[in-house]
Image 1 (cartoon, helix red, strand yellow):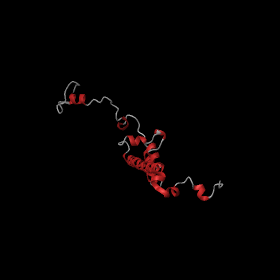
Image 2 (cartoon, helix red, strand yellow; image 1 turned 30 degrees about the vertical axis):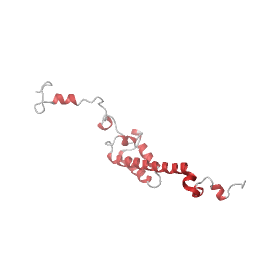
Image 3 (cartoon, one colour; image 1 turned 60 degrees about the horizontal axis):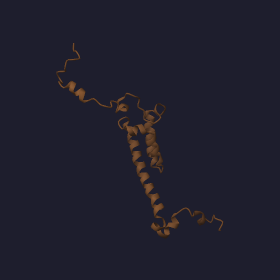
Length: 147
């Protein structure tokens, strides 16, 4: 019978290893280690199952390419636990990360386009500017009173 004071012959540094492996914050990866339930969506147990979550994440990702890139933002928000903890749901994580990258690229392009028009204006585009802007659309269509 072994007692707690005996050392293990296979590993003489067993007690030293256990002292060195102490983690000052023991629950750093508690969401992955299983100490608490892990849910793929932000609404926890009220949300979707893992299979449904995979289906929704895949749909949000694919429909984002159909000129609906705001679905990528919804995908990142709704599956935030998956985005934060990559090892928890690897199949869903792939679509959520790709949605985050797609939304970041979309936001950068939209911001560049908006700033180009807002800052550049007539100086950047010259006489073509008046054909590009929409604020004189009513005048072009003759919808004003003519005053």
